[in-house]
Amino acid sequence: MFGLSAKEVYAVGSPDVGDTLESVWGTPGALVIAGFTAQNTGVLLGGDGQGQWSAINQNITPADVLGMSAADASHLFAVGQGGQILFSSGAGTWSAQDSGTQEDLEAVFAASPTAVWAVGGTNAATIVKSTGNGKWTTETPPDPNAFLYGVWGSSATDLYAVGAGGAILHSTGNGQWAAQTSGTMNSLHAVWGSSANDVWVVGTNMILHSTGNGKWTAEKMAPMASLWGITGRAGDLWAVGSATVNNSNVGVVYRSHGDGCWAAVKIPASPPLWSIWSNGTDLLVVGCHTDQNGCPLAPGALLHGAGGDFTAEPYFGGQAMSAPGLFAVGGAARPYVAGAAADIWAQQ
Image 1 (cartoon, rainbow, N blue to C red):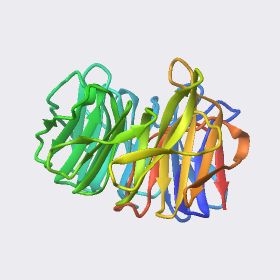
Image 2 (image 1 turned 90 degrees about the horizontal axis):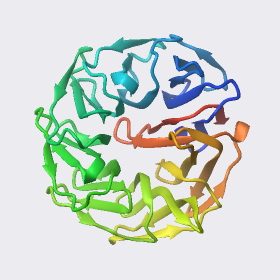
Image 3 (image 1 turned 135 degrees about the vertical axis):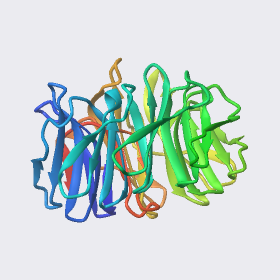
Image 4 (image 1 turned 135 degrees about the horizontal axis):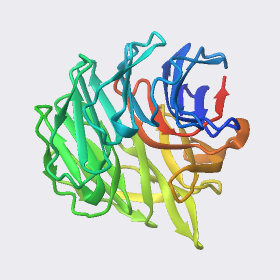
């Protein structure tokens, strides 16, 4: 899902034709969605902001695209399975770049056009970096067994990556990554911050906060839940995920006012929720159930929140939507969400 404003929002879900779309990013009048077809062939769609979509650079990659990030409208990056990396200058064309790895890349963060990092891991934890010249070099994480799921930074010299086994890594952008003590062995799924001194990590039954000093404090959360997305602003924070209620896996939304406590917010009955986006006033949340292989299942959920009240919104097809990561483009001016999915829904 991607939002240009509270009244111009785009989401992706599962189409009848069988294509799966993973990520969306754009500016007014120019949107891009990346994914793969039922034949597991890469596909990119371009939109004009008026509900019209067409294929661009069809079949550019044979792999699933898992994440996107952009330094600006002219430097857009997409990553995915098998070490796939794509680049676009925003002119509607995409080109493949050699990542130097066959490991799945789960997330990418573009701090600037000349400072881009991607993380992941299938057999070993992986971090690769580009200076914007089309070439990628490997950076070595401290623990090769801690696969990485999320990456974010307040700048090119203040970077975080999180992953399996409670892994939290920090780098000053010099190619070296140091492990920080998270205090947990639970998987950590996403990292986000409002500033260098206000950084948050969410994961399985876990919410952690740091003031940027390398120390992490667990926040109180009731009831416990597996969280996959976090956003907000200083003093008004939101996280989403799933919890088991009456033997069913259901979606949950938590809110905190920065006082160290998180409380569940009342929402319409929903499947597990994978990501949340905010423009500072409105909140949009997407989610769905998944099969045993992690593939999204219909029906999906799209929730809209304003003032703490959430309502379910219909969207075209009612198909599955998921979004395992949220990153800010241009310092949160233009957010996008990377996810799995399909039918294109637009509120214009």
